Length: 244
Length: 190
Figure (cartoon, chains in turn blue, purple):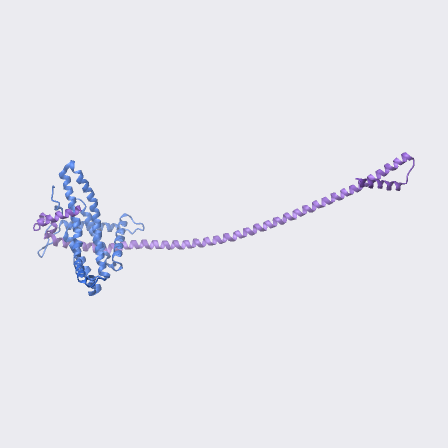
């Protein structure tokens, strides 16, 4: 292997060092690619909403399809009560999708392949959903740990399992996205390295793998964004419609 | 599965160099964690605000506009269809009455035609009858005439014959009677 496959995940600062009360907040390549993804999103939406045509153009159609897709996803999983959270889910899905997709470009940086980024999202969602649950239902929200129709003998065990599964939500949510992105990009890098090291004669096989993996990774990039968004919807549903 | 192995190898790498993250997973190096969280919050908040305040209302507006238009068009189409159905009913009833009228006219004209034909035929029949009657009377007259003529001629012949043979005139009325007698006998024998 020519280079370390993990090197692509290295964060380094761009420009001056910014330190606020001893904490390093420098602008890094990760921040740069967040800005690029956000910029692409804004460009897409800007062009998609520039003119309201009755028969939409291509970009308008894409933005409207995104809107309908996420709207349907929310109403299917969390019902009507989740309407106020539509902008958040929309932004979340689009942001993760664009970060994943931008990461598929060679020599780019995948923002979502960093556990700290996904964990920030997941913790925010976890804390937000928990607060929302308590605001909506008060202490009755604790009922979420007591599934209905369970024999009393089993209740303590089940409740403990439920509590553990509830508390592990941010971890599973963040690690799922992070691990998928990291593993995919590592694989791509490893196979890319094989292409170089095997040269002109033997390099075709890993190259074909690389091509196939790229296709797979694009699917994964979409799928993980979708899974992240839909799990957020499901957690929201638990907090909004307590039906255990 | 391959992905899983890749993850496993990378995790193994991490375990080996957990305290020297630069060599393994840069993700676990906390040096830039605050920076990443900070920039993530700023950038995500920015696009969240922009999306929720500007873009979602715009997209919703255009989708609503389209749905409105479609609904209106559908309603319009519905009213048009109702109108068309009304017109069709009108047309059908018109056609119905027209058909009845046509039937009436046809039957009337046929009656009239029949009447005319009957009258004409009767006229012709009358004429023919009259002609036949005429002809028959003529024939009868002719018959009677010819009979009388034959009678006279035979009386003449008989009286001439008698005169030639016997040299004298016989009583005219007795000749007449005997001729008539013979003719009658002849007709009877016939």
